[in-house]
Image (cartoon, rainbow, N blue to C red; front, top):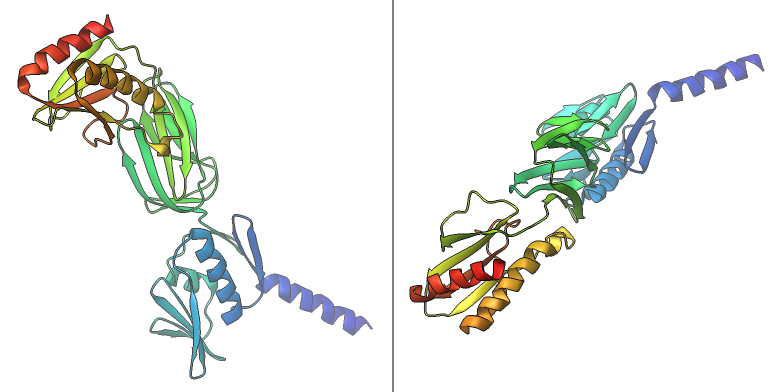
Length: 300
């Protein structure tokens, strides 16, 4: 009886020693073997979580294989082949590194990156994060700056960031409000300000607008016989937070259209900053001064 109990204890200890835990989001796997079935489950779950290409499986001779992200792993009774490298006794590090999975290992626990940021763009009035997985970033406001912080395990610029870590800092005026807009595979951090239009910026179509503030309104002219005023449309990506900019632009666009008998169109203009109210006018150069003076008069 004692021998039986000792055998059971040894068996349980062995399970504990060789057990590896794989975790990401709400998924946890306690893996006691490195085999085809275990690796297939892990890659299938993680590929769906990231929304990348699906895995494919098959058999070649005595080998079962898994293909994912243009890489293939083969399993037989005595060997595992990673690409062209045959291993007699591979570990999970070998396999996860082969598939370029980003993970944090603590003892026998593998924590996969839950958000893999693939691209970040700074458009001035907002930051745009493209990613795989789920959104795990949040905003932390400080004096004249915001910190982008991690709420989960994030892979960003060749580094893994644990919860509470600062990914980046952006300096902004303290008068701005910040808003987090979460879209499918894209998160936008928008900087919102209050507007009190006092001055007009006049530019030619194609000229870059670099200096402006919350008191500015832009009129962009192009010498043309189209006779139309274009209002930069609002973006659904911002959950209505850029509606204030659009409403100001729309107001003056309608006034100018009615006063000078110009056709009115709503289209996006990439050369107009998204946080700057503006209208774009295609009409004869002879009427530019009159239009500018009219808009200035409406500001009084």
